[in-house]
Amino acid sequence: HVDDWPDGAEVTGDPNVVFLEDEDAFEKIRSNNNAASNNREEDKSGLLTGSPIIGGTAIPATSLYSSVCVGGTFDGMHYGHRKLLTLAISSVQPISGRLLIGVTRDEMLTHKAFADRIPPLEERMAGVLEFIGNLAPGMKNRIRCVPISDEYGPPGQPPESESYPGLQNDFDALVLSHETLPTGRKLNRYREDTLGIPPLKLLCTQRTEPHGMSSTALRRIRSS
Image (cartoon, rainbow, N blue to C red; front, side, top):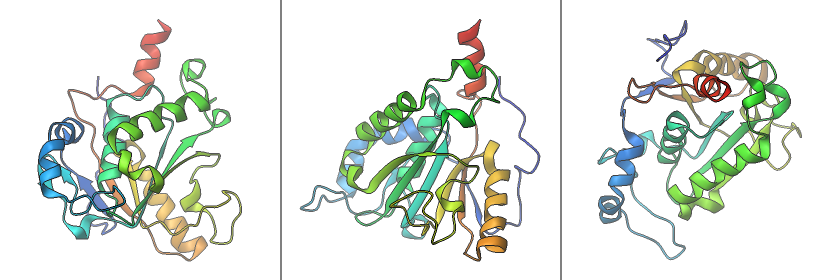
C-alpha cells in the first residue's frame, strides 16, 4: 500500500524545491558501479572525482552541494531509506563536499504508531553507517551521523548554537522524501524569518509504487 501524498507535497513555484525523478536510483547506482569508475578518476587520497551518476546519467555540477544534510528515523533501513541516503550521497560535491545524517533519538518517537517496534537509536545508527560504508567507502571521512533531538536538527540551529557540538550550520541542501517536504519548507521559513540565514535547496524524492511500503506498515507487519 502507498499512502496518498500529504497536503502541500505537490509544490509548484517554489524555487528551493527540486524533485528527484529517478525511481530506481539505488539499484541503478549499484549496477553502474563499473560504468561510474570509467567516468570518474580516483585521486591520491582514494576519493572519487568528477560527476556522480544516477541511473547512468551524470549529475551536473550545478546540482551538487557542498554541505548536504538528511534526517530520519531510519527504522529497518527499508528501500525508501536506502534510496534517500543514496540520493543524498549523490548530491554531495566530490572531494570537498560533506554529508550530515541525522537519526532521530528514541524519546522523539514515542508518538509513532507501533513505537515499541522501533529499534533503539544505537541499532538504527549502526544500520545507517553500515549501508553508507558499503555504498561510499571513499567518503567516510566526509560523512557524519549524529542523533537529533528536535524537529529541525542541525540545519535549524542558530549559527552560534552549541546544541550539536562540532557542527556548523553551513548547510546548502536538504534531501527529504515527499512525506516530509512540508516540514522542509517550514524549516526554510524558519531559517529565513527567525534565524536570518538563507533557505536550503530541498531535494525531494518521490515514493514509488513497487517499493512504497512505509516504516509504519513494516512495523505493523512485525507486530501482527
